[in-house]
Length: 370
Length: 82
Image 1: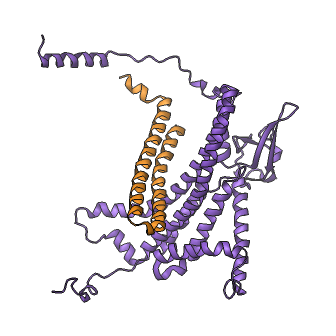
Image 2 (image 1 turned 180 degrees about the vertical axis):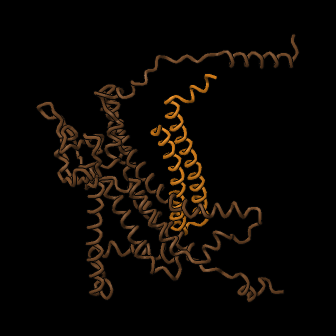
Image 3 (image 1 turned 60 degrees about the vertical axis):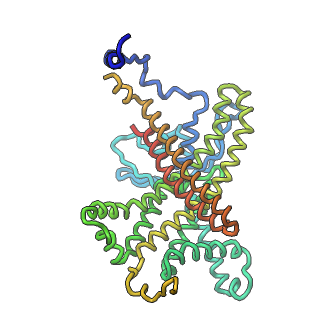
């Protein structure tokens, strides 16, 4: 019977030799095999990214016609290109015939416009579907809000009861003004209400439109949310008073050795807070769309294995999709509200007046009077 | 050691991304579960404050979801970037 410590030594020795003298064998792993996985079946990647990313047309559906060719039901959008060598080119995206043809030396590859001649550089300024949807939403918002404002000026909704769209919009505006504006910005809320209301309605209406099948994913585009975040950053920074900057670079009530770290953290915080706004809105919108598309794609993925499983998966998949769709409507409102509210909170922190702790507290009596 | 070769495979990036996203989801689940617990207990203590509590609960849940989605986006980037 060997002793305990010798046994452990044996175990250690054997484990070491196994680790040091083992070899990992890889099966014949060709690196070029990656692209051939889903050809001829259902390419989930292509469907998902085709819905999430920007495109030069509004694509509603594709079907296999009786002549065997795929037909697409799309709304083509204008393509506007500028090249320093070739000048301006404006044409409709239907000229590309979904990437099969080449127009004026430009080709459509993977949704991007490239030139066939490597010496020519092209700048793509097209009206893609994100741009068109944004312009549509802005037009609707402007017309709606200006007409409602004019109604208020005429007295409808002030001396008489509100009518029409006023009934829908007034509670929302009042909610933003009271809960988001007044409670975070105090007495100076009126200066920031136009910005906060614009941001809220822009994000809300774009979120709602993005849920319509076939529409563009505007707020799920990092460029759009980045611009919203950058504008919020500038509003926060330019409304900061001296008290705000003093607290950033000289935090009060902090021991001396912690101060350098805290100043760095506070300074980075100025940039990280709008960055969090950007990522939160972008990630929520993109994640929601991807979940909906993936749930529907499950039907086709199962259908590729066996048509019976595909049909069987359909009720479950559609059920889940409806459930997630309703949650996405809630998320649309919620994310718009959260973006606006956090921007208001940050502006409120920037315009905060210093509160003096000393002078007011002496006036209170004791709670227990003996 | 050959162990290092395994780490540099392409599949490891996908696995790392997926595991990271899963962990972020676990974090979100725990966090929002705690919010739910606190909210439901507060409603039980004071049923007339239901509306205020519900508003704050949904708000805090959305903020935590933001943090979890940070993690998911990073996991996705790990899969997509080379």
